[in-house]
Length: 87
Image (cartoon, rainbow, N blue to C red; front, side, top):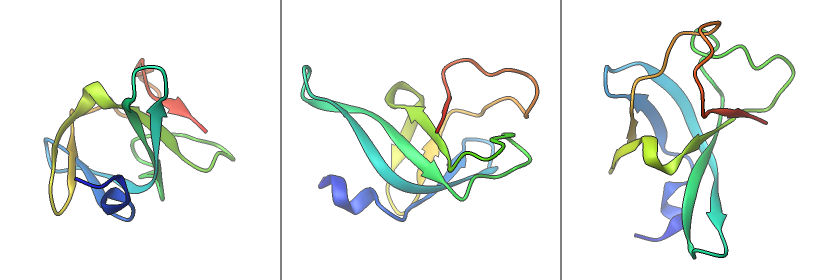
């Protein structure tokens, strides 16, 4: 799969909750692999990103990629889900 094919895909949790839309891909250059996806247009019911533009979801949370991206379900905002970076 080409990395550019991820851009613009909608991101949902495995429980069907919309997270946002893929804006970019983060890469670990030392390991030469994708380390996460940068998501914009974030569902404000999941994350309180303040003035941020989006979040980075770690690769290990991605379950499937096809017409959409499915990620592991996250806690609702305010519950302090570890591992999601706000950007």
